Length: 244
Image (cartoon, rainbow, N blue to C red; front, side, top):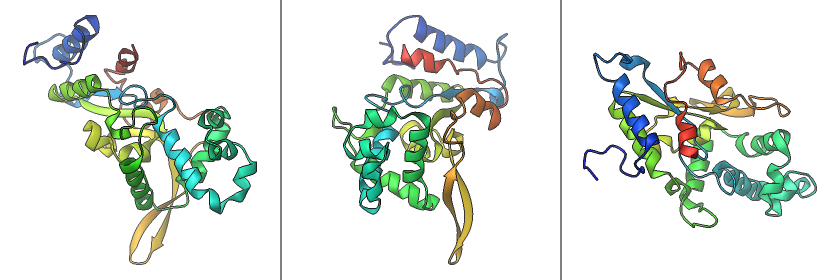
């Protein structure tokens, strides 16, 4: 393997050739496909693309542990789905309750605290949580081939974004350290915030969900166009390549 290979973990084949060839063509001055650097945007899904999604998305494990930690304060949860299944250790049944059930779980575990408090909660969880079968921290459950793609695209002048249905605030805690993607380039589902004053400083407190509990969260393509990526991003298809 050549030391100059930007994707050493990839098998030789059409997918690897296409990624390298495309990124080289659009970033080489004088090429008929040249794209100005300020228009080079590559977007990636997170779950199942950059890190594991099995047996359930990682954020579901966070929700699971948060429900169990908060359960003593909510005895009614033992009689109410989807909390009842979570407390019983049946994450898959809880997730089967659909968008409404997931929204209820999200509101119960992600709201009622300041942004700083939520960030600290996620950091502490990531430091101790382990994948149920591989017994590794979730921040080590990353796909090396995709880390190489991220680094390669950035070396060719691309801005790399994460656009996911997962929680934006959750992903922003680790995205820069793990993927090299800064927080302001992470787009996802969000909790609405209410600005309140606490002593001598301002802090944001999450109070309610940004989407209805009975509707589907915005798709990645909607989020891209709504939140400022401008034109259609150049490498949205990398999600499909990664899943193959």
